Length: 162
Image 1 (cartoon, helix red, strand yellow):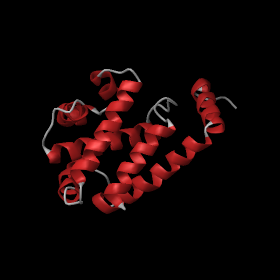
Image 2 (cartoon, rainbow, N blue to C red):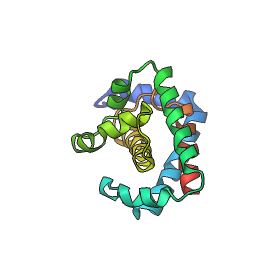
Image 3 (cartoon, rainbow, N blue to C red):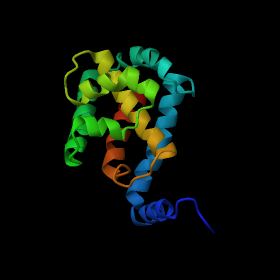
Image 4 (spheres, rainbow, N blue to C red):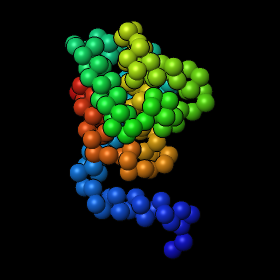
C-alpha cells in the first residue's frame, strides 16, 4: 500500500500502539466535545454562535474559578513546551477569519491580561475548538496529542457540560 505521507502514518500508528492511556483520553474528549457541541451549539459548532454559548456558560456556579483553572492549565502546558505566547497561539492554527476575531482574545487569556469573564470563556472555547480541529483535520503531532493535554480539556468540558 502506498500512502501519501508514510512518515505521518507511521508516527501516528506508533503513537496509537504505544500510548493507550492517551488514546483513551482522546476518545473521552471526542465524546465530551460531542455533548458540548450538541448542548451549546445545537450539534453544529459555529464561531458565530459562541456568544450565545458564553451567555449560558457564565451562569454555571464557580465558572470564574473553572475558567481560571483552565487558563492556568493551558499556560503551564505552554511553559512546559517552552513556547512563547505567540508560538503557542500559532500552534492552535487559527483560520484567517478566526485569527482576525480571536487572536488577541486568546493571547490575552493565556497571558492573564483579560479580566472580562465573557472574553475568558470565549477564549477557552476557541482553544478547545482549535485543538479538536487540529486533532481531526490538522497535523497529528504526538506532542500536541499528549494524555495530559486531553485530561485538562476533558476536565474543563466536563465542568461546563455535565
